[in-house]
Image 1 (cartoon, rainbow, N blue to C red):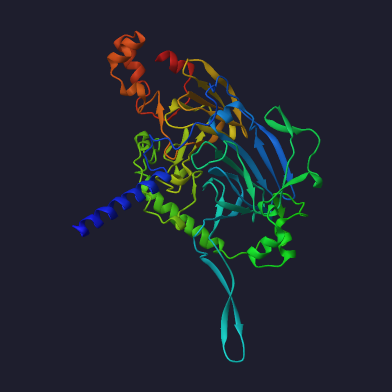
Image 2 (image 1 turned 60 degrees about the vertical axis):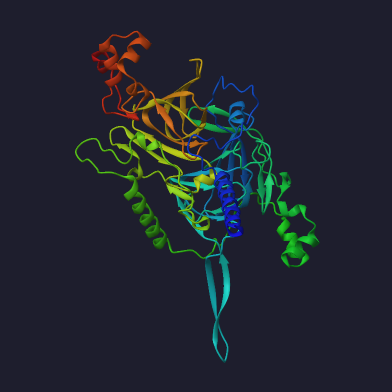
Amino acid sequence: MAASSSFLCFSLCLLLLCHGAFAQVGFGGPWQSPRSFAGPRGCRFDRLDALNPTQRLRFEAGTIEYYDESNEVLQCAGVSARRTIIEPRGLFLPQFNNAPSLVYITQGRCIKGITFPGCPETFQSFQQEADQFQSQQRLRDEHQKVHRLRQGDIIALPAGVSYWCYNDGDIPVVAVQVFDLSNTANQLEPRRRNFFLAGRHQSGQWTTHETGQQTSFTGQETFEMGQLRDNNILNGFDTRMLAEAFGVNIELARRLQSQTDKRGEIVFVPQGLRMLRPSRSQEVQQQEFEESMQGQEQYRERMQGQEEYYGESMQGQWNITTNGLDEAFCTMKIRSNIDKPSRADYFNKRVGRVARVDSQKLPILNLVQMSATRVVLQRNAMITPYWSMNCHCGMYVTGGQGRVQVVNHQGRTVFDGLVRQGQFLLIPQNFAVLKRAESEGFHWVTFNTNQNAMINQIAGKFSTFRAMPLQVLMNSYRLSIEQARRLKFSRRDEFTLFRPTTAKMIRDQ
């Protein structure tokens, strides 16, 4: 009897422990929201704007541009966005944030380090030493894994995890980072906070205005050494106690506090950054291996001589979440490249392509509770009208321009205009949206506030209209049977992306 009671008690404790662990990382399926309500109840999203950066901070080896954080729509959605430019041999100093985020590399290549607490330093280098009796190896350095990033990579950053980045390439690195401030991982107020481990932070505002397709910054330049006024977190500690904690002298502790450092958040490394990492050829081989393994799971048979479709249909959006145990925490992949045509979930050489990354493809997104979508539209092509079922969507344009229309629950147009390269548009949950490329094409990446974002298409093969019986369409819109049939089947087997339609084709239908 005692043994039976002990076993029952152990089973209940194990069940509670597992339930708490899974709830913490958001294993509840795509229908469960991982967010808390962000803004005041008066948020109505009556008017949306395509945003340009409104604040620009210049440092020794780079620039950070912030999108208007006082914007009512961004505040209501609990979203913050910034664009970082790191010059060659520039080091983005270590920091962490109060909210999870996704980073998309729009240009260049770099090395990124992310420090997970409790994980071992698996990269080790040794120095050979010899005396008259024997030779031995002395540990030179050890650190956690560093990651090679390139254009098209999406990187997941959990809240509170420190990270840094170094540009070892020949051109500037441009990265867009979107924070989900209403995520339950953020226990502070719904506002982005940067906690710096090194350097000093510059505060300064630049106003912006739009000239053609470029965004220009006006106002008096703010990069003056005296304006570096926010210190790193080590500066707040007593110098003697800090020295004792690290086991170093007072002078070294003062260097950690960076009180006289005027370089800012991105610093120049004259001799380049040296660290232990695999050779570039080994890194390329590893990336190709990972992509080939992922490709075996993602992509189906390729059809040649016709329109080419890769990967899953729209039914692939209805994912079943995993239990999160198939990858150890310390060895989780943090990135996925969504820029290659061969990695697309949908590909049509005459229309464009769509690539998604969610928690099924990148399990660490269960911790971050965000996902991303990459869309490339050819000239004058259109993406099916749709609404997002379980998340807000932050749209950043990486190339070209296109016309976007967004409609609210009252059938009113809350946005109708051209969105250009470098602009950011927040599309609220359940708002219907329609996008069409202009003559130069239209490319963007969408940051979703759910790890398994789902959309509901309005037109095309896998759409809501296609799923309805003809009689429902006839009585809903007062149509004849022939009109309802044309409405339902005019796109035939097309879905997601639509080829350009001429006025003659519309008349013939």
